[in-house]
Length: 240
Image (cartoon, rainbow, N blue to C red; front, side, top):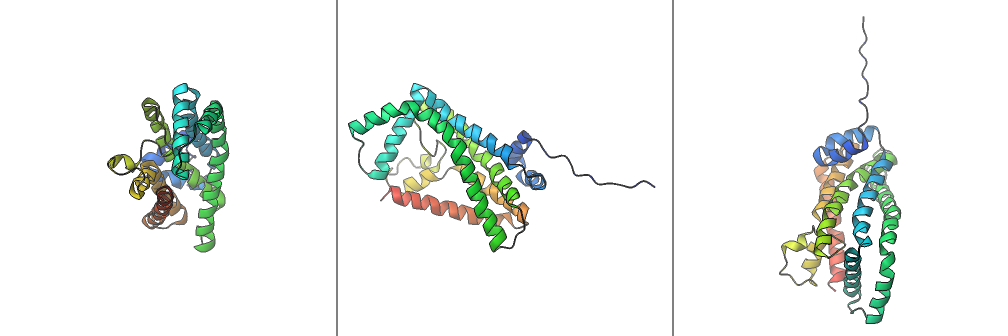
């Protein structure tokens, strides 16, 4: 008599999991949960975003675009124009912007992933009675981040070609309403809404739903509502 044994299918490779976030997130997350490996995906995300953001700044055109963006951000937050003296100092420091930006991604992105992972783990485990491990939740977070990373990579050459740069990139809803006053609440709100970030948020919801066996629609609504609140807060601050 021959016994039938059931073996666990081999875990997918890094690139297969990255592609799976776009083509079949639910199925891919089922494998990710079985064998959570957040470090490799986080490293891939950081490399893509760091190179896409800092790479153009190693050129004169990209460095000038980054400098212009910094000036615009300062003037938006302070409501005052940047003085000639301050601009000259910023221009002098801009030669170090590219390497600093490159290194900063390897610091801030892991911190952000750990922070969101901790928040989701606390909410679903402590408040909603889930039993998932923190490593599983962190794997959900890091794998979902690949959506936003690809958005940044796709937007980088567009911004470089235009000679402009913005923190939200060229893909935001603000471009659909150019007739709005750029200082208005609605213009700032739409400018903060990035389709790739929205997509990544929905993918995160799918991953959490698979992990905690809950409806992805409800989780997606909650996460998108939070995203909207943050966008509203930023817009209110910029349009004050």
